Length: 239
Length: 315
Image (cartoon, rainbow over all chains, first blue to last red):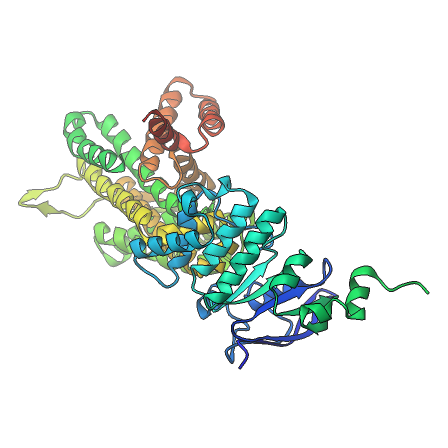
């Protein structure tokens, strides 16, 4: 059975249909790339799945149970964690505290939550930055901090919103390796990303969204050759 | 360092009153400082920790004051029980306010608290059957109480000093608890970024409503004490916007989200207010405003916050 199943998901903003009868599934253990041109509705889809926005229509189920209409913190406790396109660390709190707060979602004792946080930060390579305020990290470090924070909630499904945006090539390589490692540790991943090289390399499958509608769904190599995908990114040739 | 400060404050509370007991003015000043400490600490729980700036905390103060006096005048309930029930009444009032206003964020939340406070003030002004309207409520005598065989003299200010000292200390202990508890950590996360807090599983609305209730309880106790001490309340005395704003000032000047900050803020603002009121009958508030501006410009973390930073820097 699919881990996450999205059916006919629709969201209107006034007269604008940002997401339109959008359907897809994610299998357990998969890395799914969600791509599309700017303004295609990728982040809206994330906001709908995680409860930050209520859908205008459609169904979202995690392991067969609906998550529509739940507040974001309940969705997180059900097992879906996310990061944000524009990073949202707790800037004045220490790196360790940022992640400890997330570990509190399933670990009531502070010492244990803190040691869990340290483990997560080790995984993303921020072990030596524990006491630094999150505001003092570089953008790349803040993106990894957000991943550690999301992982500390023990998600079964992790939604990453442009984890590689604004990173230099070496950092992108590191991020790719990290996503692979997260999957290897048993967390399913949906990845919104503009860095195509990364998407092609680490996704098992790619879903393409354009004007809120799904226009392609398949293996990365096949999808990039799909005429509709090429048209969406580059426009149709003038005869 | 917080522990040292707490011990020092405790010693001061116990030792100071007998030394000045002969001077009723100084005792009154002490009572005023401690009442403002209580109110500043109450506001600080929500405003300092959770970053939810309320401009309507006079509501809870006023509800506490009216509850205490109404229960005494109409049901004959002794004001010390009434004071606690006043705090609980403020909690009850806070729940719908929280559930409505916390749907809004940032400045919109602040404006909605201002609006609610005005509504409550107008209700108190016009519901004459319960509140006596603009005339207000007056108690002439307080019931006789004997403590270990000695009758307490309510004409002296000393018993009031001890009562408000205990209440203010209670608010500081509650604040200290917040700095240690998971709820307090959640509030700091909410202050920093509410969306991110939700995204890691924090029930932000519940945390804010709980904190507002805690904050309202102490503000309500303060109102009850006010009713007991002045033996008179009317809507303009206990529901004015100025009162709400003063609570904000004390917490901000003292140092947000600290245990000791409200004491420092109350000491500074009360003494500056009194000093300039004595010297300049007209326009003393100008100096008050000037002092506020200097603190905000040069000590954005408040006096206590700035002092703590300087201390940490020297070591």
